[in-house]
Length: 245
Ligand SMILES: [Zn+2]
Ligand SMILES: [Zn+2]
Image 1 (cartoon, protein in one colour):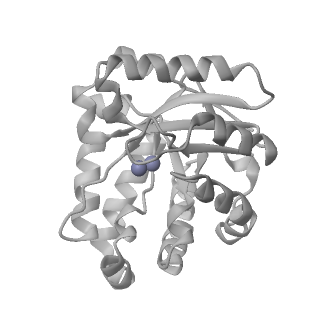
Image 2 (cartoon, rainbow, N blue to C red; image 1 turned 120 degrees about the horizontal axis):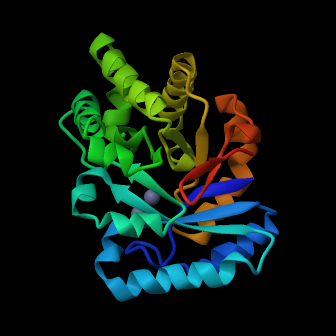
């Protein structure tokens, strides 16, 4: 088992030391854990160097593989010095700008993924269910599922498949109030992705606390069963290479 989406205190919105997650991951008998810090922190060189150093120090002292990664907001990529990405195991692209509607959100996401610089800078796409994190949108979401929506989603997934990018299954929304909408959406997306030829998924708890991390571990099997996914469907990354289970 592994987790490709965890935030430590190198992210602005978590106060958990890397070491504490590592201890939990060992306890849960995980094989790999990846720290995907919010990208803004790389603006502080020293901070970023400390991050890499801390991971390097821990990396080989455990049976657990500990990976360095970044959660990069897609519009931010043009500002990133690409040599930084080379120091990481992978970069997880995410898009956090909510639009007027889910359709508009996905049109904007497709637009970002159509940018070669952006697409080539990421290894996986995070939380494709992001608009569902907003309660109001989630409630009306299923009604908005129409043909325009299908076409845009298809194009997004096709972009990922054609460029060998991995689709993250972000389970953080499956734990909230809108479980049903997110679950139905993911089931649909996974099926489409596979129909197009998509093979690679990565598992993301999107933990910002040890409680999140624990909850993800406890509920993991339940969610995977509902999504009809197996542990063997999930890949990890080492120096931007996809490693199968
Ligand atoms: Zn965060
Ligand atoms: Zn995240």
